[in-house]
Length: 202
Length: 244
Image 1: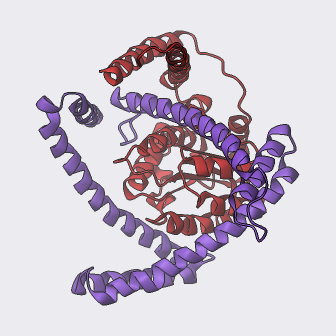
Image 2: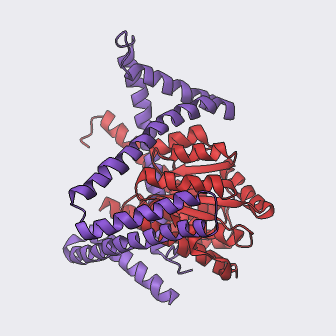
Image 3: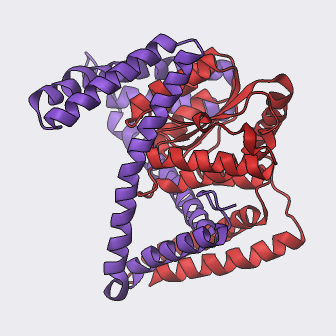
């Protein structure tokens, strides 16, 4: 079974990869395989939601900390799923669930995030005092001063500061992205060769 | 054709170096974060505390899946090493298919360690499907589950700051890397020893995941030098007015 799953994964991976290089020969097969993957991923969402509910149910059963929130989550899940199933996702009441609950909650988290980031920056020098940390903080502050609106108008030399920091940050970002692209390439090759089998094959 | 050639070269080099590394394992430069990771694994088993491993929300149907696959390779090894612990590691993710793969990987690790009966499918968790719901769902794990080390490896965005903050509040170790530039800068400010850029993909090699992982690092270095050379030659030719 392990050999079969590995062979299946390697075969499908090779067809999808080669489909990009030889579209005339393999594109239709590649599209079919990617469509299957999308359908399976959609089913995986249902399995994932079952997992989410199971974790919360276990919390409630074991009377763990946060069990009340877990009960609330499961209750909200059942009600939303039930109404969504009956009314359909396009129904105005279902749309309101998203607009009136999910969007404001995520916006609040975004607001907390802004405060968290400022707090993390302040603590950086307490955690790690080295040249790079000082440079990191210094550049962040200078960049913010140059790019944000002030009550006195633009600060002197803002254009120059933005050009210099922009040039360095663009160069650095490209370097990091090249490294990440190479890492992704090699990780993909390991999966294609069947060395890494995240699908439980080894 | 250039992309196919690069792919072919990388594949051939990976095979050659994997074969070579099997015969003589390589030595790596010291990365403090992975040193801390290896120490934390041992301490968690001894203390009866838990590791919280978060794989991010990189969908395997997108290019972001690469970092998730690298994190899964590390998870496989960590699951094997911590299977004897009283408190098994908890894995959280923000993508459904990734959550299923994390459960599969955990089970494989336990099986390899001969402790499959210890495996519980609730230790691989989907905590949310949007960036902030994923973070909000993972934070209680950091606060309430006796976690001593948080390992955040994979595709995270700015929501990673909330996880890092939760880790800091609990006074736990944080080992974090992401393929996203915003998250990398957040981790630089939040983690004790930050992992930058492609260091994320070295996780497998540093936790002893095998010769292929070690070979990957060598091939990455070779390809990086080739790209640097190509950039320099390109810039030189452009400077000389060559039509490129």
